[in-house]
Image 1 (cartoon, rainbow, N blue to C red):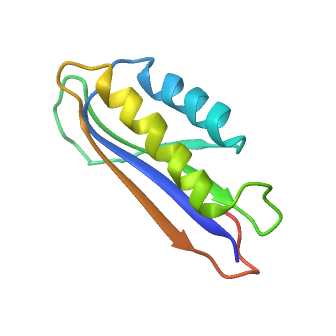
Image 2: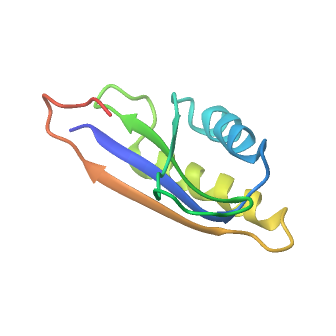
Length: 103
């Protein structure tokens, strides 16, 4: 069964940080990742952004789901450790129906 893995980042981040995390996640998991910015409507903020990074693991993936999630956790831990005041991050998994493996 396909599974969606998402990494949510909430808080202040640099302009290039989402791209760097996407590259790190892609390199670690060998999966294509997409970035989605959360629209909070008309909110005034400076550098405060919620982003969600998403990948889908299918049945034919070479890595097991647990190994993939462990790799994601490793990337997020390394990414947070490189910051003095790291933003909140959440890693979620969600099983998708076999016929709906789209994001």
